[in-house]
Image (cartoon, rainbow, N blue to C red; front, side):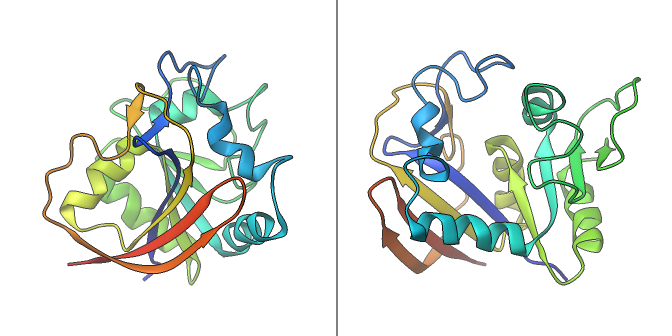
Length: 191
């Protein structure tokens, strides 16, 4: 079965978006730099980490808010965050309009979305996109690894990655490296 990885860029104070995130401002106020390590500030190591993601991703699970902030024109276009890789969107209500076939809307919870993503991913990885999906999956034992890209910035408000978790889960660090734009950490989730 495909491994499930939560992969997030995060500020030193634990935020993955700033306040007032929206379709027009998807990372929120003051949080655009969280992804600089993917762009102009990227080093060869940063680019290698991104390439490893692109080569390894077999499916993506995301929440409806992440989907709505980024799909279509001005976002990912007719594909998802990893191109034509299947994206399963966890939502309470399936949309009434049609979307590109890369998107499947799952109305029966994060566990069902992850199970479907694992089937779609084959021998590749399932990546969780968005804090809410990770916050739902981690406490019930559905996350195998957490990859954090820690950016030396304090945002002070927005969406915290771990703010509401009370799980007692233990993590084992398996990788750490630092580039000028971010500290990249990988953890195995111990059950």
